[in-house]
Image 1: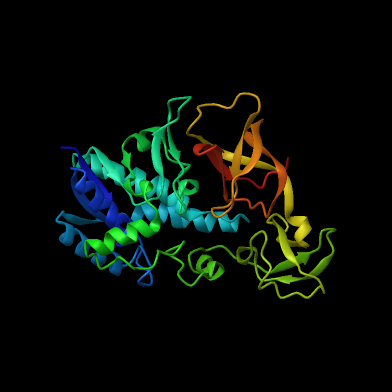
Image 2: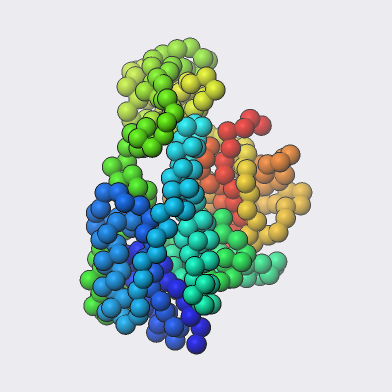
Amino acid sequence: MSKVVVGMSGGVDSSVAAYLLKEQGYDVIGVTMQLWEGEDSEGNCCGLTAAEDARAVAAKIGIPHYVFNFKKVFKESVIDYFVKEYLQGETPNPCIACNRYVKWEALLHRAMELGADYIATGHYANIVRHPVTGRYTIKTAGNKDQSYALYNLTQEQLSKTLMPDGAYEKSEIREIAEKIGLRVANKPDSQDICFVPDGNYGEFIKENSDAVISQGDFVDMNGNVIGRHKGITNYTIGQRKGLGIALGIPAYVTEIDRENNRVVIGTNEDLFKNNVLIKHYNYMGHEKIEGEVRCYGKLRYNQKKAPCIIRHKGDYIEAVFDEPQRAVTPGQAAVFYDEEYVLGGGVITREKM
């Protein structure tokens, strides 16, 4: 009997994943990762409520449950990264870093020490072999597909991971939870960034950094000063609300100029571009890019896949989209697909073409 360690956040997805694997005949161990001692709430995957809910689910379905302390690796790989990137004028995605370095790298290492064959999560995605290359990759799943946030996993991590929820829709997972009497059946989904529950990123960065965050100039697309900003960590590309300037037309953040401590303001039309430069590319479904590869790209979690080509450009990967994409944001992920299979992805960079 294969042994699997399931990362249980106390939510309905990971709870049902543990149940499904037990029903499939696996020797299942439930593990909750203690990551952050912040504000606790029902929708927070990091707090005490999460561990209590996971423990209750484990008891209900008849599996052992443990709590692992991953606070150190979470701070180094997720929080410190989050703060550093915002100070650089970028908008990072901490959930992607957490997936790669905490929910997989750290958990997989600990699971192997326990003699497990696999780890498992409640993500809505499917781990398969690419039909052409034979490499491990992720195949999209249902209406809650989470493949975008998983592009950074390695071949080894994918080979030792199970994602049973990928075969179901979210509504079906809740129905299973209700049918077997789990108290988390209707629990709200966890927040996107668990360690900033109030969404005030600027204040969080100020409290968790020694850096001096100074006010600076708002400038228009021609470099003319049109106001003062509160510090670049308070802004992101495409932002419209909270700017505190009145131009008589809808105004949006189009660029964060960290070197000059300026925030560039423009119109909605100024937010669109075809070419995107990507760093730290992770190969998944393909092992290399030769010439130009036609595929589909996503630059936001909730964005639809858009046709494009990708190719090498020096040390980077360049994506050229058939249609201009809105609010291309440095620090966010760019993920590329061969129809329903993840080819790979990386991080949108501030470097100029």
